[in-house]
Length: 292
Image 1 (cartoon, one colour):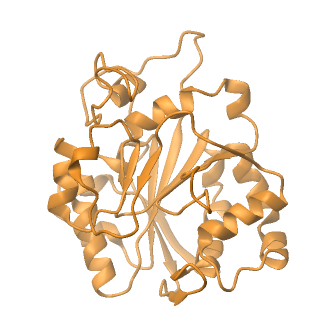
Image 2: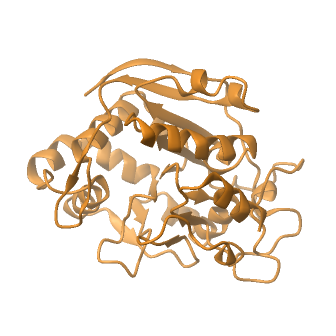
């Protein structure tokens, strides 16, 4: 595991439930439900039962592979300037082996960045039957760093999101709101892509706090018992969750619209109410989707 150098940044930047939905916005897939939920000056309401809405902490991991880091930083600037994606979560954390705050100096809202800097290479190889990034060992180390700080216990849900994903926490509110408070307190994660062979896929991963507790207490066991040297981190987490009997649930609303054969999702899909889209390699295309 890479040694944690520092965990720093300002306090929580909460996005209210009303702000998530947009004033008067309907649920995704209903009339008015396409709003991306960019920041508004609204209050923080409670639900009808008087209980606080589900909260989530969002993590992003930025790689240090030359052009990959540069590309991810370009995308991150769009998210940051719009105060969108993981920056719109109740709390967030950027993880890299270099200071993203320093690299974002001068960018609007750059002083809001909370980061975890680790001393280890984030380079990974490609291969396996899926022809993808073989990054399980890297992510196990990162998850352990998160667990060591207790960051997985601070919110109701932990969300891992890629820099090249467009993520609208406003829409995720409706996805999670479909589950009762009792369900949300169980060990569960959402299948990012219910129709895929691997249903938990890396562009966005959503775990309840109880699920994170299970992963935290059993990560070494999974690392021993789950074959992981030729798979990506999402496959590993899915298999680990199966071993630990963590409940995998299909989201009742549109969670992720993925595509593996293009550089940028067509913006015509951006108004369909999905909570996340992947991939976006072009900052201009990413911005256009936010504006749709």
